[in-house]
Length: 264
Length: 219
Image (tube, rainbow over all chains, first blue to last red; front, side, top):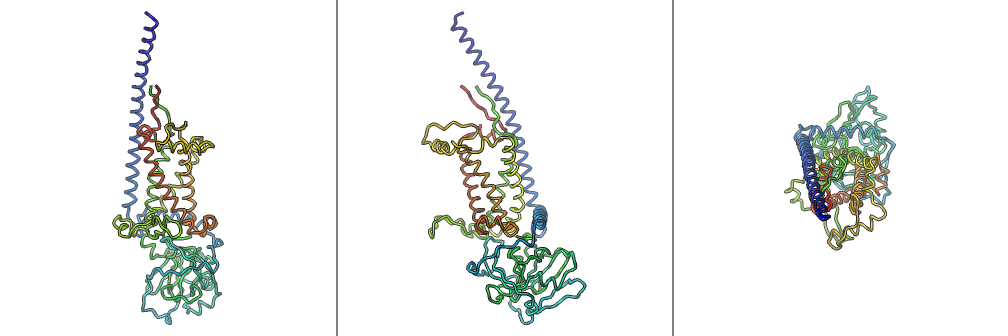
């Protein structure tokens, strides 16, 4: 045997060892990738199943019920974090933009403002109260220039003048511990449900003027809610009824697939 | 000779593959929300290069119109999973030490240019790399910062009064919305480049994101 033969024999042994190793690696890759893709496939099927379940679940207020629970969970967290001391940013008069007209639900044309009265129901130990616009205006007059944020994404800066809802509620007070306030436009054309804390926020106004002029009918004359701690769809126009209640009040857009709370 | 080398830890693979469908739902539901007020554009001054919208008819044909409520509800549900998965991922990379392979270092910025030149076939040699090359380090770190940007700008839009300080830091409600939108466009761009790179790099690399191991060849 020459030296060359030994080298060749070693090379062959090495080649054989490499080939054996590669076969083992290939086998291991097959095992690992089979396992990996089976788990991945099962996870994908589970995810698809979960998605289908979400989409097809029975609906509450036009939202699949698990998603409605999601909104309500967010609401609980938001309410826990909510402080009436935190104010919506206010702006100088120069920042005021055009008051966009949006949403005419509940504003029937055959409305006579002269006959309008505000009715407050559910007052602690008292029958419902009926107020004229001058009764509402007899409360301290408040002004604020704040942002009105629409659920669609746009926002405008407007100047509101009105009465703090909290001031009115101090005079016509709800039973202690009352959880909700319901508001309705004439004939319940539009209706909102509100949580008590948001109603007591100092920037929640029963507004009768917008940008220094009495409300026009499109903006909800004679009295509407201006409430920068909520999206625009909670800021009901032409309020006729305010009712204190412990039963969660229905909400026009909350019944139509939107968040009931809608709080900022 | 082939060897089998561990590449991606199990946790990272799960974080990655859970994030993918959740982020897809967030982007899609975001699109359903954006439809209601599609205001953004690419342009300078009065010159608009591209309006970030399509004709109302196209929306309707694509069945994306009048689904604002649905978009919001999905968005406010899946946001939790997006946030939790993202936070756990970041915590994992910190405590496992994986961040060392992910965060760019001093050389990364220069090297990333060389990687890009290599990928565009303008340079033969790719710079040496560990698990990730410099361009990957930068983009995988950027995407995490974008995720944080989405969460914070999202919170600034979602609760602009209770988190008014955050909305203020973003430069106001509409600016927060602006950032929230453009970060999302960033995800879409990331996705396109990411998919192209994964296809280019090949099956062995992709499979490693599923089974964790990569096959290496030594001659």
